Amino acid sequence: MMKQTFVHWRLLPALFLAFLPAMGANGQYQGEYQQDFNPDYDLSDTRSQDYLRDVVSLSSTLGSAHAIRLLCNGRDDQYWRVYMQELLGVEAPYRSRLRSSMVDAFNNAFQAESARRRQCDEAAVSAEKMYASTGQQLANALAEANLPSGARGR
Image (cartoon, rainbow, N blue to C red; front, side, top):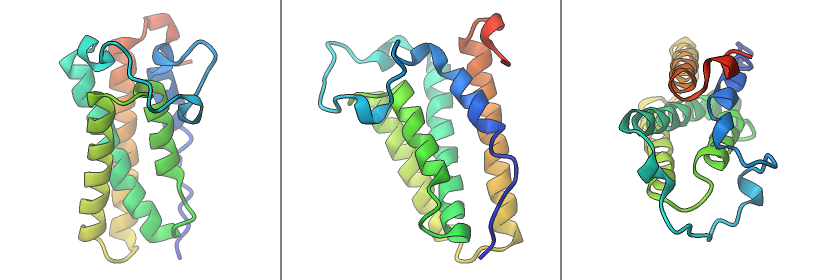
C-alpha cells in the first residue's frame, strides 16, 4: 500500500485561517456543539453567494481527496474526513442548509471518486495532490475575501 507524505500541512493552516473569524470565542469544535440546537435564523442566510459556493466546493474537494486517501492508505487514514469535520465545526456547527449542503457535497464527491477509481496508482496519487492544491486555492480565496488583510498569511 502506498503511503502518501506530500505537503498537506500547508493546506490546514490556510484553511484554519480562512475560517478563524467564524470560530467560537472559546475555540469549540464540532464535538462540543449541541448538534440539535436550532438557532433562530440560519447563518448561511447572512453569507455571500460566493462564500457559500466556495465553502461547498471545498467540501466536495475534501470528499474526493478522502476517497483516494482511503483507497491508497486504507480505512484507518481519516486525514481528509477529520479535516472536513473541523471545517463543519467552524463553519456550520448546527443543523442548517449550509451544513447539509457541505455534507452532501463531501459525500457525493466521495462516492463519485470511489466509483471512478478501483486501485491506488500514480494517477490516483496525482489526483489527490491536485485536490489538495485545489483545496488550498479555495481556502486562500475564502481567506482573501473574508479576512482582514492583517489576519491573512500568518
